[in-house]
Image (cartoon, rainbow, N blue to C red; front, side, top):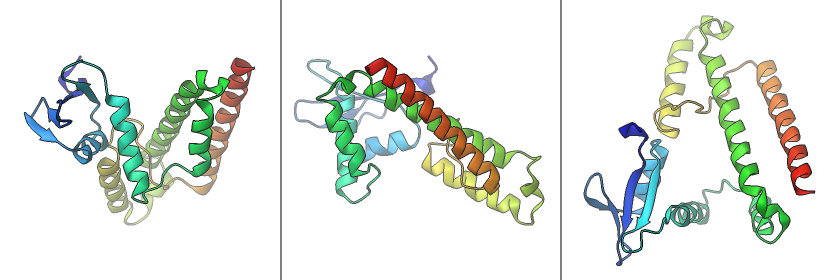
Length: 184
């Protein structure tokens, strides 16, 4: 595994302090959130027991952002997540969420590719290069250095964006049908 693909190992000490093993210093949840936004995979383990605490800390980061008013998850989604813990949906919910995010990243990557395609008629517009450079800088800041599948700004023609949205809706409907078959 290449060094850049290797997860950043964070150790939690008995004092609950978090220790970055790469830089040999203590970090906060906000630091860990920053590493993730930069595109790093992070693994958090308990120093004494070796238990993987990554999920627990990622949920804590999400909860802190939500409590600060940085709402990303609608109440309906949160309600459905809670419901999934007490129903048969629990067995397929993780797969459904993973597939949904994978499809979202894939479609956003396609939109980014279309927007940056030199054959795109928008490239002939005056100022297009400056706009494209701004979009790339924004996406790199938002999605960890412009990793594959990073979402694109809405620069595709409205018809193309509508077609992409229709494709996404179709894919979600197909996934829902598969999940219904699995759960029923």
